[in-house]
Length: 201
Image (cartoon, rainbow, N blue to C red; front, side, top):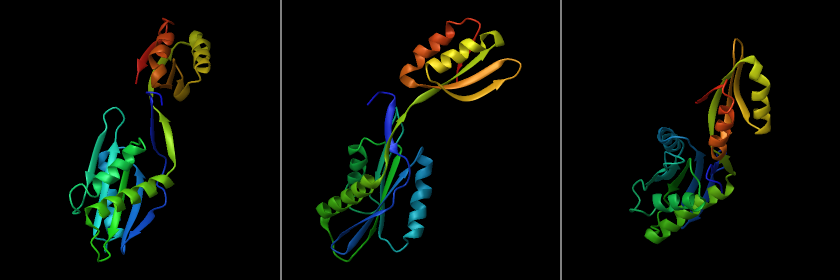
């Protein structure tokens, strides 16, 4: 995998159910972009499953600086959140939250049983998720006078850049999205045309 790509899930898959000795473990996976999104999702699941005993979760968020957290929600230490987190890490995913809701069936599973149940529930839901490779990009703003328009458009076409925004009024202004690994090279190519103004957005 290139340095400028990362793996995540595109959308929330259908929840999965794992049962062990009458306890029921429901696995959920969500794409998330920041830590602020986590609590509302967990709170919503607590409302939906208000008769459940535990709502354990783990997340990995971020690209360059990854923030991760595992929450056992009252289960014995490291018996729930960590096995869930390890499944996310095992698939090399980021920007993902996995929640496993447990309905207690009256029989204690022991720490080994819990680790296995939470691990399996997390694995099942992630196996159902559509994993996608996303490319990291950076935006570049190019400001130009009309005589340079053809040169600018030719470079955009040559490098197959995606135009995010364009404004062709008094002066031309185009914002393009460039793959991170190619960014410096392409930026320098535009900068060789001295009549252009080039700015990183």
